[in-house]
Image (cartoon, rainbow, N blue to C red; front, side, top):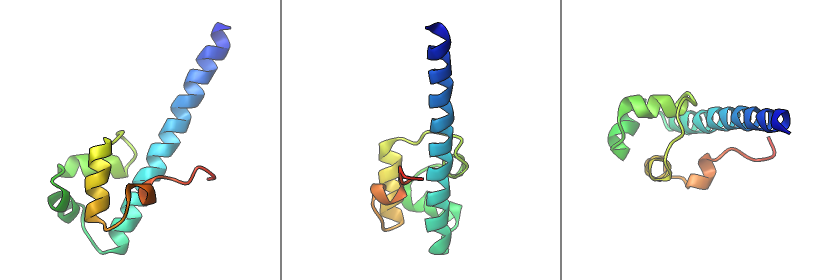
Length: 87
């Protein structure tokens, strides 16, 4: 009933938070592995520095367009940035 819908909603919210955190971690790791600063990445993909920072911290849900720009700047695919569903 109503309680199970509420529980499902919050479970989904938690899963989304975990997903965003892992996504941000993946982006930050690839960026650091290439010795690129957040500022350089920001310039390379034309995305505001504070938005890059929020994405890497898992505090925002980036658009597909933003992910595409970031992946292009990091010489990888969007799929490479997406957390593995088995984790």
